[in-house]
Image (tube, rainbow over all chains, first blue to last red):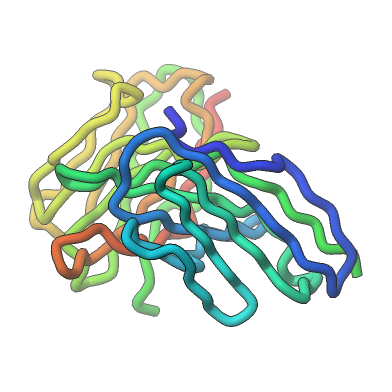
Length: 112
Length: 116
């Protein structure tokens, strides 16, 4: 079963605009990760935020985490056509071996 | 290339046949995962190894599925008596947890299975 639900399911923006994707999850986590999957390519890890962190940056990416609301957001600034891909959040559950569970994904299209 | 590799990349088989996929993780990674991904969905967890021990199996993994990691290095996933519903992309990933916490997983390119 999928732990996370991304919102929106699909997003289309013009190159240069910012893109925001949201992820909600159900159980307590140790960390939350965002991955990108291009058409025909494998999944690539983008950024990881731990449960005791609230915000993290990496290049044009900004991730926030609100554990009280069990939600996270991924912001891509100044989008490029090459950012066109599906984006998935993945949560590592608290306790145990911290199984990683993926969400359903947001399909982003950046129009040149 | 020191990334995760999977073979074959594509497999077409007839219903009822057995298939086996191989995954070679990044060499220093002690955790290895198998996922299944269907069109429009995120990867669904199938099973997980820490070294050679299979520590968790999803309920998705019916008794027709078996996975091994005999020497704690490469892993194989076998599907017996394939069904059309088994058609999917099978992904392998590996990781090396630091500080006792799960960290980023490195994914292979996947094996796309088509069951006719």
